[in-house]
Image (tube, rainbow, N blue to C red; front, side, top):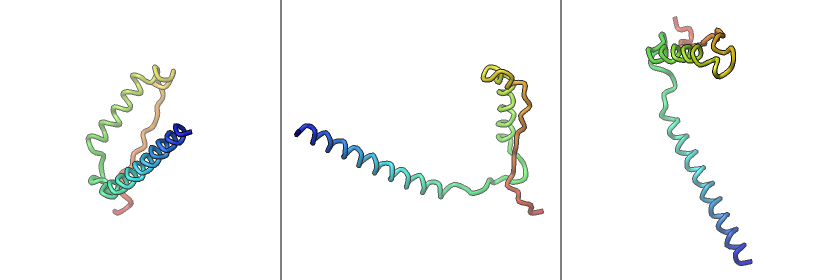
Amino acid sequence: MKIIKSFFRFVLKVLKWGFLSIVVLAIVSALYNLTLPTASKVKDILTQNEKAYISEAMNLQQKMGNEVWPGLGNLKIPVITYNQYFGKF
């Protein structure tokens, strides 16, 4: 009986510290998210990195798509982009 009590106390301690760790990590994550920018710096054009990501995605689809799913490499899948420019002409 003493072993069972000590085991359950250990389990409760682990659960308590695990729960507290998750709460602390959630608070730290929320505080960090407050420091992130709300909009991109460049709003009217795609940056070179963004163009490279799109190009690489299309390249991977063409070269490796048929290995992942037969016929995927031959599909023409559109790429949707937006630039956060909300009609301020």
